[in-house]
Image (cartoon, rainbow, N blue to C red; front, top):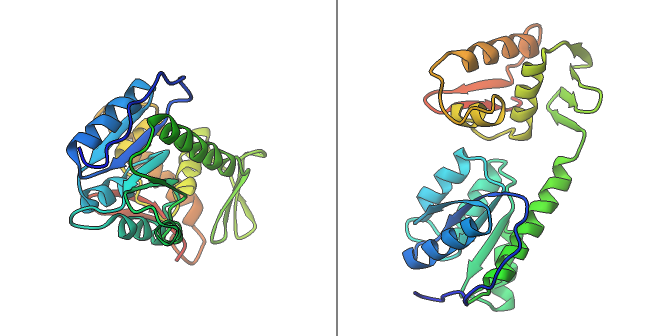
Length: 240
């Protein structure tokens, strides 16, 4: 295994995270996936930059671990591309390149932390947990704004252009999730798991019905659309 991590000791369990590992070394990727799973987390693996970018762009991950040197698309390009699309998922960069200039380049490309190979798994896990906590603090913001659309989580109110919009509880939860992922494609699976708490597709049109109702409420009487259907992929909330 190239640039292998050192053997890891017993790790205390923490809040469960969904983690994307983008690593082309199969043995290193398998090690990370196994170690993260043993630590109580869910870990998905991509073996090249293009596959990793697609998973990150369509998935709902708490943290990403990205190797810098990847086939098909290098790690820094993956990160920069995701950031340009509004993806703010925290990223820990893994690399054998450990000079100061290398770390600075990685952080400026959009990485949130940088860990040089070989590494101790206990340190990697601690860094991932810190990144997740930071992101959780950001998500604690009580007001989301996209263009002239505003959602207040504390008062449970929605306004567009200053006009209050009345939503049913499920519509509010749906809009909140879409606003948290504004600028990203939100898939049917993501909505089923995070808005309806289904871990299977019940093969109904429940999502289509609720999205249609929500779209009518937040777009009727306004000049520009804000809830877009991405054909064959899902939905995206984006101000135009």
